[in-house]
Length: 327
Image (cartoon, rainbow, N blue to C red):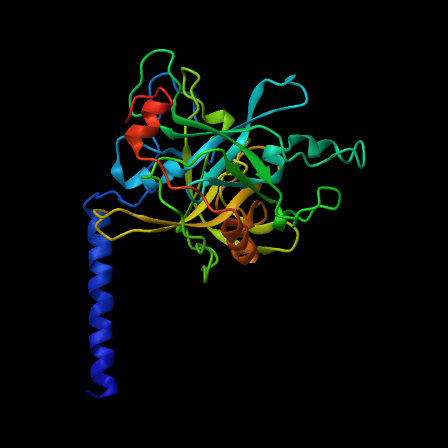
């Protein structure tokens, strides 16, 4: 076939794609990809802020189940006198390791500028990782299916006294393995990413996203990596609010018909928002920031290999041992 014939076929293919795309728009069909439909406000919900396109990860949609690896982190804070308080989010990357941001486990590093050289890493700090949202629960039960305690593992790459936030990662080694159905996550979500392409979802438990009943809820936000930032990692247009720090930036791969399970690969760890309030995704200057996985992937994989997990527990056995009701 000559070049003119190939060009003609290519033009017809493009025309067909254009017709299908615009035909769907004309028929009023909504996009089916994760987080692409307009978020809804339920009864008793607070009015959404301007530019707020975040959505609650649904409890009854199997396509979202991989997001159950994202949980909330509770630690004793300086002002809580030993009581555990939620300080951020984290992600179960294999059976017994949670990846998060350094300041989520050690929120007192925010005091370093006021009182230099007072922070000290504590390998015995209690970290409570709560994950796996319940689809239904009785009055007084936790909104989380599992609670496992652990201890922090310093990767040796982040200095809180001269911080480079592109390295602000910390591992938590859990005291026991998570149930077997929680998958090990791939750590290659930011390989060959395209700047500005919104095939990422930032996920975590924001403080401003609690339910009217006061329960923590897992939120997602469809967004893009806009490019690298020398000090802060990736500059993104993700909506990150307090409580999402330490959570996950996932690269999302899904089929066009939205019928098959999606594939999530970890691309980064949210750590900073740029100023107060949410900003439009097309804002020319404002950005939120995420710690890159690719920059630290080899080190992470070596750390995980040095601290192997015991065999994951079957779901029923884990639930019985911990007095839980299997989902």
